[in-house]
Image (tube, rainbow, N blue to C red; front, side):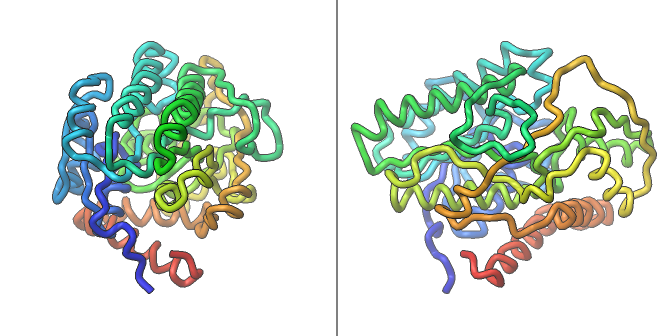
Amino acid sequence: MKDTFWNKKKVFITGHTGFKGGWLVMWLKSLGAVVCGYSLKPEKKSLFYESNIAEGIDSNFGNILNYKKLEKKIKDFSPEIVFHLAAQPIVKKSYTHPQKTITTNVIGTFNLLESLRSCKDVRSVVIVTSDKVYENQNLIRGYNEKDSLGGHDPYSSSKACCELITNSYRSSYFSKDNKSIGIATARAGNVIGGGDYSEYRLIPDLFKSIEKNKTLILRNKNHTRPWQHVLEALRGYITLAKSLYIDSEKFSEAWNFGPRLKDCKNVKWIINKFRKNFDFEIKEVSNNKFHESKLLQLDISKAKKKLRWEPILSVVDAIDLTSEWYKKRGDGERVSKIMLYQINKYKQKLLEKNYE
């Protein structure tokens, strides 16, 4: 039976011009949702413009630090479901621009939550943070939702602060004044997929090097991360939002969404897999200028048990889908068509595995 939950649901998304935001908008549009986006204007070369993400939605350019503008847009649109993705998401940039990182991530989250206090129709809120919110001790096991929050760098600490602010608002306002509002945080792994043009990220750097015929500089080759395709993380957000809408009290907490532990691979392993699909040169260098954790893995047992969410793609599947996206784009295929094709293929795989 086709799931019609999202049909005509009013959904507000911050950060809709970004990589994950663009894929989320495309997926929700395919489910019949009425989407309103609020985000900074993206760079000219972006997934947002390439795939015409704005088509069929209420797309707004604005800074989440502009409280009055954000509050007015939320009040005017009056969403039922909210996804908060707007952030400064790059660890390396947080070292060079700590004030911007902390202000955008912390005050931006505060502004959103404060704006939602007077939103009469809101039922479900998903605040996207990061797998880096944990106090990283390079543990072999995956971090679970009960582990201590921390953050060595400004980005990680800012996202840990977002967790604390969300919990504070949930306890002080959303659970006491109106128990029908569900609010949760989502901590996903390192997402990959077509259309990510961010700076200082492995896969975007890889395809920039191919496009410009330059050697890829490979730093921290032995660092291990929880790699997953963007659609896996987004399915976690979507599943969580729906669950919050149906039962706010049961699901209003923190959730991990990551790959199976066997799919957590080091940087060099990932690059070598891409070299089977593309021809490029690499140069390995040591990078001690900025601290980054050598090992990071997530325990997803809670999401598997309580949300019935678990990965259906392996890390090789994620690499193959990403490679397919860039190959088709390189052959001149329309980007929105590629995205919808991959979303529909993913949804079909979910049906085959008896997931909604």
